[in-house]
Image 1 (tube, rainbow, N blue to C red):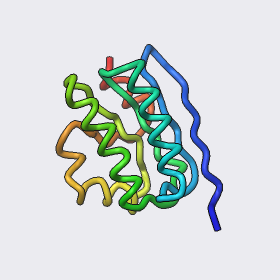
Image 2: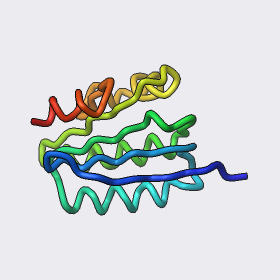
Image 3: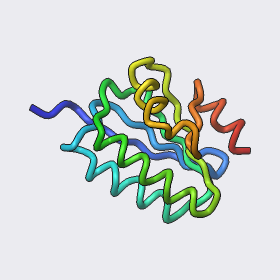
Length: 116
């Protein structure tokens, strides 16, 4: 049984914002990977990923975001990760991604302030 999964892409102040809802798992990571790859072709400096609508993320989802972070690190870019759910934040903190070029922020507004 697959949960509702949705991705929305927008741009604000020339910074791409990827908003994700649902469960990020092995079933929908190929779609997420395609979206992130397309966004990174257009912008290799910064990216905001909003996970506030995500209920669950597995290791495949973490790996997909880690791959995007690695791609951005090649051009000294960063990901601003909007995430206010403690269980999701903990996964990123434990993984060590939050110590590399992935910054955890409270809101899209805060993320935009960092990328300016």
